[in-house]
Image 1 (tube, rainbow, N blue to C red):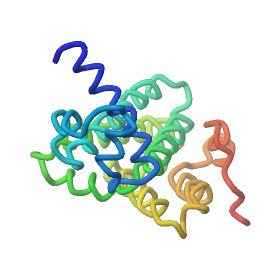
Image 2 (image 1 turned 45 degrees about the vertical axis):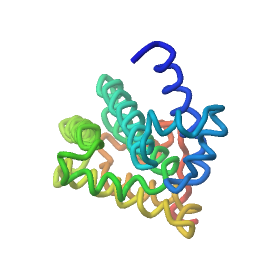
Image 3 (image 1 turned 180 degrees about the vertical axis):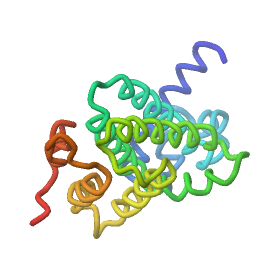
Image 4 (image 1 turned 45 degrees about the horizontal axis):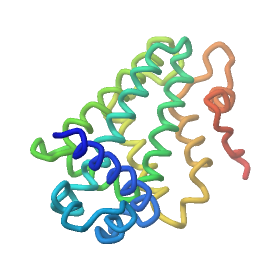
Length: 203
């Protein structure tokens, strides 16, 4: 890809991300082209369908999540790293409405454009869980599939308007169920240390 074409591609993706965040996966291709300052034909040359554009956006975001997990794997606090990762996933799900359903489909379809990125995120989740389990700060009776199932369930719930206001509360409940209280550490402390104070369970 030529330098100018690559710049155009990156610019369109950046604009599309904002539009999709506002309107979800049904965002208008014409609106994206207009806001990116390009013709619809140029947009379609890069992304022939809305699905192709959304998949490109998701792959970029999923790859960034995997990179974040790689950074967290060097953390001195595996439990806090796991909580941070879970929070990163929730923010991702909230910013990409409809993503959980697409990833669920990609999970069983090796031909999907999302398959490799999904597999990398799933693997990263499992590694972070194993680190916390090895330290004794995450319950031992779950595996990477269980963790990603909980993450996906929460991502699906907060995609529903009725549950959106409860996102932090639900996040804290699930994090509390995953983590243990080894060394007397309160789960809420681990959550707050990740930089996102949860709501009280009594709220």
